[in-house]
Length: 403
Image (cartoon, rainbow, N blue to C red; front, side):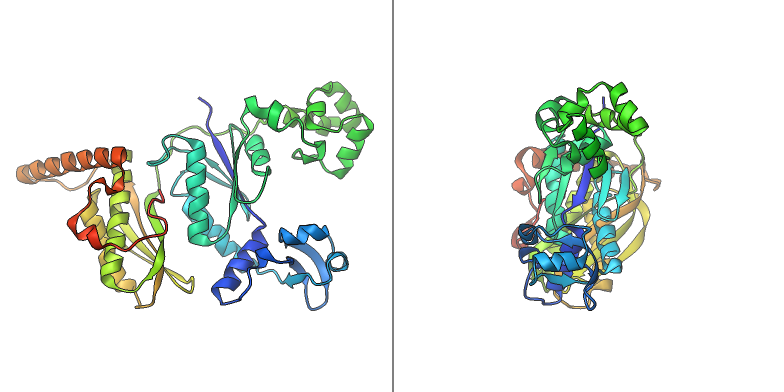
């Protein structure tokens, strides 16, 4: 069975990241909603445009063009200087989220990466549903949107993510090529630049479909090896190998952005309890045990802090995960309003290391059977089908199901 590849592409990355950061600092306007761009030396009005807002496209402002040209088209364009340290931070935060869903993440650039899809609880083994869950979680927790392209190789996944933007999920499987890719202008094909497109137009080739149906020997005669490469791409052929071996998961965790800031220990405890149950469910589904627990706190000013603790024995038990999470929370929390809470496990193994006596073993088996029964009920009827009595007063959350 062919692996499924996701291509995750941040929409107008530099502008989006600058916008999210400025909003967190109290800037009254979202740069993404006005005529704005990132790039150049704004004091000297030189350099090039690195990213632009969707409204700025109305003035035909283009990425890569000189700032002076962009200002001629749109004199009131709001120019923001780039902050590459900030962009690296956002990129790392996004990849940290993606790593919770797959053990195979392949960075392509600071704002793009490929991911080999691995089914996870809650996605019903549907890559499209999984992509929407991931896309929404990135927006809820980090504040920016992404496009996700889905296919069976890297080329088609990347082509799919370039379809309608922003904040979309698109598929481009091999059987969809004639309908979704071949009608597009040839310059929309990966690796076809302006010069190659001009050469192809002289040959009467204006669409990707026309390129796909051209004799590759003719293309080689005019464009050498590049001609054969783009012919393969037009037919959806891409030869980069995809490793299909299953690698050991490095960590399993969940985090959630709260609909209202958490300001008390009791509220935080309820949120961490729900996260512990979700993490425990995924550990049991993967037949793994956690030897390390960490807690992440993101405050209302978007500053993030985390703390971790080694467990005396590897566990799956949600009660132990919750108890350890609360210990870490109490050590970490400064009393400031909390926007996001996360609980993550690592140092995973396929068996607990604790040697139990006969009575402990009997109790452990009873707990395992109970947990298995509860998991089955929750997966069939929803997380709220069975709840602890202490959970009845838990605060509402913006993204209760972020798995």
